[in-house]
Image (cartoon, rainbow, N blue to C red; front, side):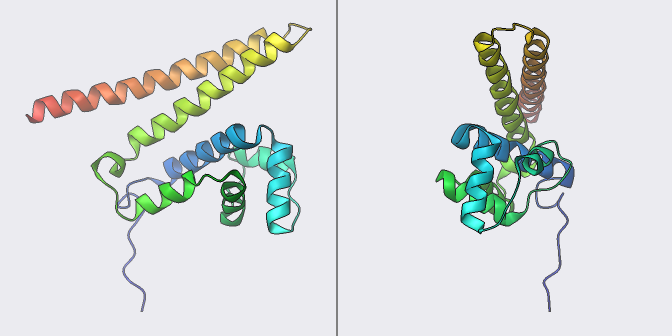
Length: 165
């Protein structure tokens, strides 16, 4: 007999938030440890003895497809870091800070967006064509928006805790 199931909201995350959070964590893992989708695909291929294309990884990062557990494990093992596994383990006994998932979700989003902005800036600096200004501005704006959303959550929590005191 199976134990009674709890829905994802009771576990601390709504499913869309959890999917975006996992995606942001995988994106940061790929950017920080592999540098490009080709290297990430090669790491998955080597560990799983299968073939995954950078196009498939790109679609996953765009949330068109979900991330298979075996590929997440392969990426984490190859990188020597396990942020998604740790996050999933925390779901089983969330503390007050991770129970809502909000702060963690915003921190992941800030990390992802600022990383993309930095990448765009560096690509523009290295480009001789100089036609990447629009993309740099878009990435910077997305990073600013992510920071503003995180700030709003932190402010609302601090106001809520002051009112409870």
